[in-house]
Image (cartoon, rainbow, N blue to C red):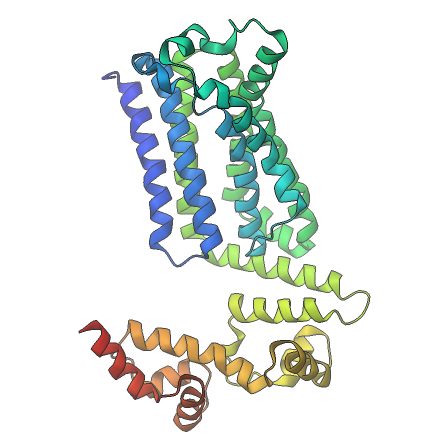
Length: 366
């Protein structure tokens, strides 16, 4: 294990697992954090198992032999939904979700009898070549060698879906960032090369591929941090494209409400003190009267009440994170035109003034 290649492989594995926890320290959506944490954790564990096989360490603990194999089929669906969240800002469960995760679930169920074998029995079946039943052996080998093709299929599915979700402007945004284009081309090259190396069983090269793939995952973490505005623009473009398509047949109330929420959460339109029923209606392609009716009928709120709810939540966050900001500064930064308007709206929603809210917060922290 003291071989430099082994140490570098282990260091890259630790880096990926560290990235998994790193995402939890940032202000991200819960679904995004769960998917990234699961993907990075599983990938780190998988590459650790591969390294253990390459160094022979796994044979000292044969009860763990091939334990990771069926779970690797979850990697493709996880990366598919990770990219969906990057582009769309959210993830919806659907029949497609079940279909993409079904191979992994079925593989885990199929492996249950293997999981129950003793260490010595697993050693006798190492590689699954010694299984007598031809059909059973074929399924085991299909699961083991089908992981990379399934991963590539899920990635290709996202590319097709993503191209439909973005306008020409959104696609240009991606193509103009040469680092993203180069990154994706590099990933395709690595996937093909890695699969070929895995099939041929070249020990040294397998460890090199572990290092390279793990470094690519870590690199993407820093690309996200370097270009946050790019991914925000991509999500905005995707949201607008979906909305326009959903409105082709007339006013789609559900689509309008969803689009309003996206505009508030992604673009934070509520921070604009001049935001009005007319300007928002124009942005949505509907009349102020239609917008007013939709808000009253679906979220049971008038336009000022709906917008002020977002502003007050933002103000509460500001007041809690920065005690020196002051009530009046928080009011203006959140889109209110005056301190009185802020105080009145805050009191109606929270049952206390902003000053009382700050005092209560200090008592709870004391």
